Length: 402
Image 1 (cartoon, rainbow, N blue to C red):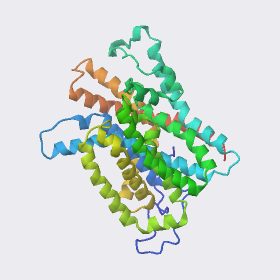
Image 2 (cartoon, rainbow, N blue to C red):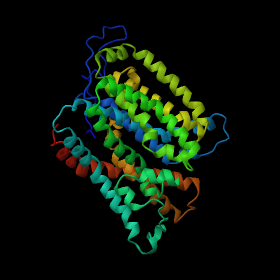
Image 3 (cartoon, rainbow, N blue to C red):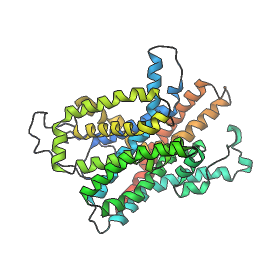
Image 4 (cartoon, one colour):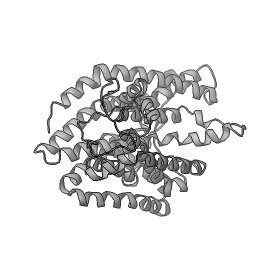
């Protein structure tokens, strides 16, 4: 992840030089060397949505005619992970497109990904493995460990999402969030080969085909698999529409005529994304991530909505949104997102159990307050991890050149 520089006011992404009526022929194409501060802010919004979801705030119930619909719509905060997928498709796809002809293409890509993903994940995995070493699963005064329905080895091989889908559960809370990391890793295994071997015109058609096929596959799993609705949530091919739309955006900003067209119609892009946002309202009332509505069309709708958000961030289509995305706090949160995502759930659970020693564990205040405490501790750990652990390791990773 990037460090936390102040927004670059000379960057056309943060402060567009052209108006809607201006000539757009001078708009620069974007590659992986282009600094886009707004994307750090967008990543910050993604992790913020996940944290709000897991803090259980939107699980509260209200009889208020005004508050109750807002709480229902707020339950879509779980979809922050879908925004991560679109961002990942755009950033990783862009890197691969730019390095497509490099003689060190595969070696450098996988070395850099390993330096970024594996060290912190290995620490989490080591802590998780302690549950198998303690006598009778004892966790001391905070209670006992629940049995793990997901094989430990699957976490090592990044196949836990497959087991989760087949068994219809995310498993124990400590490692629940890693299903999306497994999806990302499986994307890393397939995307480099496809982008390397397929020319751009055929790649575009392939990506569009994947976007169209994903909801069909999810619907088939819903009909024919025992835990098909859950499998549709965690299987990589079922979430490939979000990832593929991100890669399509990476192609778009590297294709002169298309990029000029999108940049020239930034206002229309905002209106279109706003329309997609309105469409999320009935989807939110349609149920949780495993509902029939979400499995069939909901994930794809979210993918297109977050793709619109991504393009708004890149083009600087709205000055207010751009200032928010380029704010220091959101950019810093985006830089800490990976560590926060991995550690926030176990820390929230530990905080709730600690409060449960004094108060009723199952009460809403304990869950909410414990969640907030866990998030704050997680943010502190993430900041230390970035400064003293992740950032030095990343420097080593970037010693590998394409």
